[in-house]
Structure formats: structure tokens, C-alpha cells
Image (cartoon, rainbow, N blue to C red; front, top):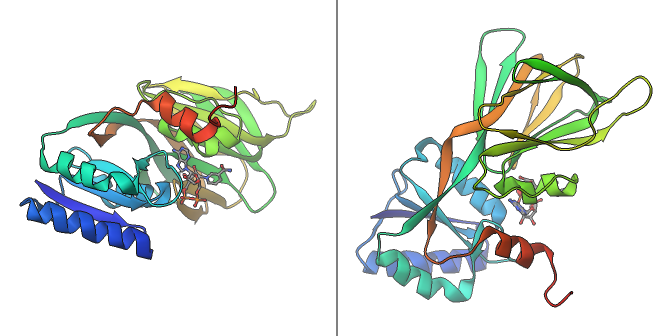
Length: 267
Ligand code: NAD
């Protein structure tokens, strides 16, 4: 089996990276940057997102696992103290794989036929620095509303505990292939009206966002941010690709939600 380690780059993460690399190569596993079967991220959720995007072109062949060197992460859920146990489990391959849904985003331009396609593990957000975002929201080809406000967030189930949660979105179990649309400070008065509640769309229900003014848009895909001019539409739906996590022990989603957000003994 071929493996690759993506480190956050700080001293602690780099030390853990060298330990894992040394032990796994001693177990005759091959360190491979180009075509790893397993990518081990060492750092935090940000490092995991970086590792995911580095190998996003080979999701069907690469599985991911995260070790955290800061506070408990959502994707980085192995403790530094557990690294030796993890190494032994990896060396014992084969391992179990758990798949989570991803978000597909296609950005089309008004100027040409070019389109840019992205996959997000957490979410995509659309904002502007120039006043309000004004966008027609279409669901399955039908006009749903005209949004006016700070922006919109479209998240995956596993990303529902990230930015989406801060916007009042619901937490969705990753066994439900879906995307969630949440508003950022929508303007609601006698003239402008939006639904005001997060919308959860199942697989095959495409959401099309069509900017109604000429503002430049700041579009994020996970931790990446880019400014776009002349955007014709932003198409969002559940991607056909999935992320594959290597599972060496059970760590149910709701346990992770509880451990991350609900203080122990707080009942
Ligand atoms: P960062 O360093 O600002 O970290 C953001 C925090 O989000 C970290 O504590 C991280 O552990 C946590 N996080 C990331 N993914 C998560 C998930 N799926 N569930 C629960 N918590 C999660 O930024 P970063 O590390 O580069 O991560 C980028 C992510 O930050 C974005 O994808 C977005 O979800 C999140 N973010 C959140 C807010 C907010 O909550 N208001 C604002 C901007 C970005």
C-alpha cells in the first residue's frame, strides 16, 4: 500500500509526520506523493481540507484519515497519543472505508462558455464586498425566491457542523446525500422576501443561483477564496464523487458532534 502524509507544518505536526512515515516504511509500506492509497493528515481540520483538495482528482482511489495536533477536529479525530495504535492498524490493512457526500459547484461566466467545476468537503459561500448579494434562487429549474442580503452558504452534511452551524443551519448526518442552503443576513421587509429557513435538498435537486446585479462575487470552496466578475450562474448539487475515510475504529458522527459541541457532564 502507498501512503502520503500532509502535515500542518508546525514543529509538533512535523514530528508526528516523521514518526508515522518511519514506522510505516519499516512495515514495508511505500511513501508516495503522486498516487497514494491512503492520505494521513496531521494538524487540524484545515490541514485535512488541504489534503482533500490536493488529492481531489483521485477520490475513487485514495482514502483519508486525520490526526489532530491542536484541539479535537471533525475530520482530524485521532489523538497524537494514539498514533502508535493507528500505525499498527494501518500496517494490518485492509481497512474499512466509510463514504461521505460532497458538494459539486459549477460557476459559469456571462462572457464565454467556460465553466469552472469544484468539489467542496465542507461548503461553498457566496458573498460580496460591494453592498448586498442579489441572486435569483432556482430549485430544480423553478424560480424559488430572489435573495438579497450578505450571502448564501451551501454545505455538505459533514460541513453542516462548520460555517453552516454558525448560520443557524441544521446538523445533517452524512449518510443522507444532501446539500443545505443557509442564508447570511437576508433582507426581509415588505419589498424583499426570502424563506428565512435553511433548505435541505436531496440528491438530483439542483440549486441554481443567478446573480441579479453586476457586483463582483467572493466565492469560497472550503478554505479557498476567489473573486469572480461577470458570473452568470452558480450551480450546486450533491456530487457524484464521495470522500472515502479509512476507518480503523468506530467513531459515530453523533459522538463527534457531542464531543465537539456539548460540554461533558453539562446535563
Ligand atoms: P479556520 O482556521 O478559520 O478554522 C475554522 C474552524 O472550523 C476550526 O476550528 C475547524 O476545526 C472548524 N471546522 C472545519 N471544518 C469543520 C467541520 N466540518 N465541522 C466542524 N468544525 C469544522 O479555517 P480552516 O481551518 O481553514 O477551515 C475552513 C473552514 O472554516 C470552512 O470550510 C468553514 O466551514 C469554516 N468557517 C467557519 C466560519 C464560522 O463558523 N463562522 C467562518 C468562516 C469559515
